Image (cartoon, helix red, strand yellow):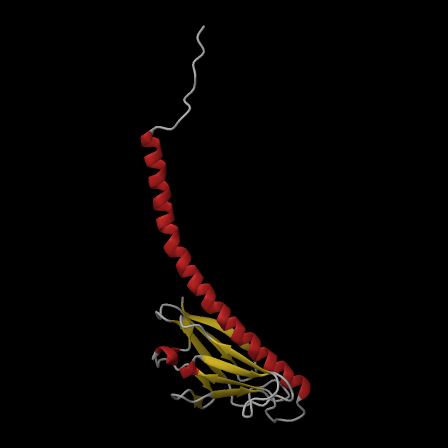
Length: 180
């Protein structure tokens, strides 16, 4: 009786077919993952803004005894950054105290930074973001924004994704997708 030996290698055709299938699958996954990464980065920056706004709101509730703006955030849309006044001794004008400076990367930021005007980058109450000027957000001791409700828009550099951080007139802060 002869024992039949099994094959010990793949044929060239089998290797070509498997390689082709792998290339097709990778070709479909890469664009999807790049789109997902871009969306996740944009959302993460929106969450960072939301958390900074909630920090300022909570500091104002905890440490303010009147309607004075002791804790603020200044948004500089044309410079693609914002500064958070995060302690009682902080002062945005003099640059002293605990100031948190946040700069966005070149691929993500305010629409004005990418020379896109619609919708406005930062709007609170009647204050919007004219070129080369800041827009300020502060809260009273009840957690209500002094300037009124508004929003902060962020986009990616290709303008395919857009998210908005919305502050209501009663102080609720949420994130909404405008373009996904």
